[in-house]
Image (cartoon, rainbow, N blue to C red):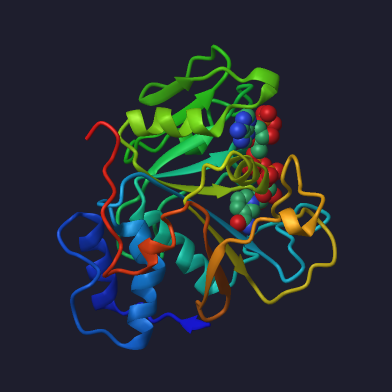
Length: 275
Ligand SMILES: NC(=O)c1ccc[n+]([C@@H]2O[C@H](COP(=O)([O-])OP(=O)(O)OC[C@H]3O[C@@H](n4cnc5c(N)ncnc54)[C@H](OP(=O)(O)O)[C@@H]3O)[C@@H](O)[C@H]2O)c1
């Protein structure tokens, strides 16, 4: 396990990488700073082409909420700071309407310097009310992906997709967001939304952050719509493990070229379709 050390200078470098002003390979870094570059570099880099990472924070027993639905702050303080760093490095953050209704998250960057991402809600049936705070911050773009004709407040961009059997194809969601200029995306949850992306093979990386608490019951994090029946068929991604401090993160490379992106020197820039 690699402990990360997010010093001011390594964070400044990562923001510069995000803006295309620097690479992750040059410089003299401590082992903890190098681990931070390995963990966050693939999210910051834009030269590798479109990137979609999902992050879920869960307990030791794989839960994201108690039996009464209490879900706030399963992650420890370093897990929360990690989530805000991820938000600061991507173009857009995507949540399902379940999380939007349950948590009313702000999806802004508050625990580290950096820009807040574009907010995207997947809402096939139009369940998110138009007075939801998420739709009313003028400071960032707001996008709703929906399957119904429903007017949204001024300034909110609406993407209308077909939802055969009630579900959008995650590949179509990504294509629509890429067309809107969002190349690097964080799927922040909840588990239902992330599971759709995993099963569709639409994630570059999956990060599972584990906090050392046992809940004993309640909502599970990831449950795929069509789980494997044999362990020999289970997904076994290349994984690196990082200590955030209070929490541990398993950083899994799901796309074929995602593992290479961990190596700041040898990862080859990928051509973006149409570029
Ligand atoms: N620990 C964490 O990291 C974390 C992060 C976020 C949320 N949470 C917790 O997770 C819980 C909510 O998660 P959840 O799994 O119940 O809900 P969710 O993933 O937030 O939202 C699921 C809903 O979003 C819509 N949706 C998502 N993907 C879709 C697709 N491909 N096609 C069509 N519709 C899609 C569907 O809406 P319809 O139901 O309208 O069809 C679906 O039921 C809350 O307790 C929240 O606190 C935890």
